[in-house]
Image (cartoon, rainbow, N blue to C red; front, side):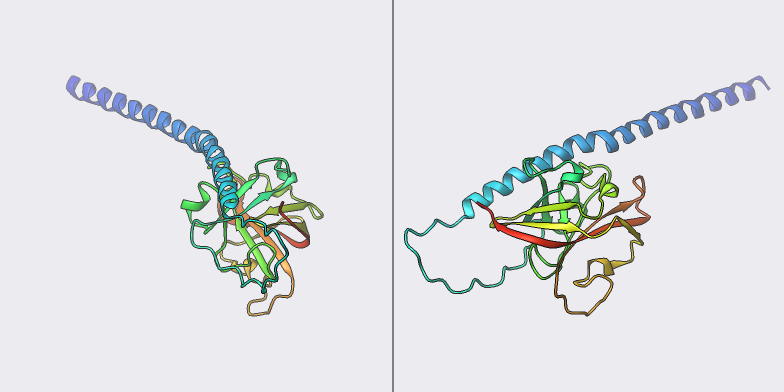
Length: 229
């Protein structure tokens, strides 16, 4: 009987220690996800912006000393996964024109979204007819779209590319859709197969903040273009 009691006490103590250990590990994981990945993520995104600016500087053609007649430029090639696409400046999200901005790379896999926002492959590039579509984390890894729910109709989004600045105006407050609703990034959102006639933009992120059971989207249209000098 005494032996059975001793074994029971050992079992209870062991279970208790395991529960304490698992609780500590869970707490550390939460801190890692919600704090550490954001610190690292913001640093990585700032570095991506710096790298993009350096690439654009190197790629910039020299200005001709005299006027030359040039043929119309060919259509811009679609970028490959991981290529730089643009830099977003969204005042409502705390990233104005004077700030570093939010990098946009090609692709929407975790390898991209854990260090930048991602351009949906096959969607329009900035300034093109169609639907320039970008995804970003709302939590962890720098959470660039954490406050996307605060975007409002009339807000401006500035898109910086190697050659131009594009200004988009948000058309409506954020909308919640299902993750399976891929039509939101169609050239004409929700109308598959329809030929686009406008320069549109769609930003997407997870909803609610702590989950990914839904998608939040913000849409806008191009209102201005100017050269990047």
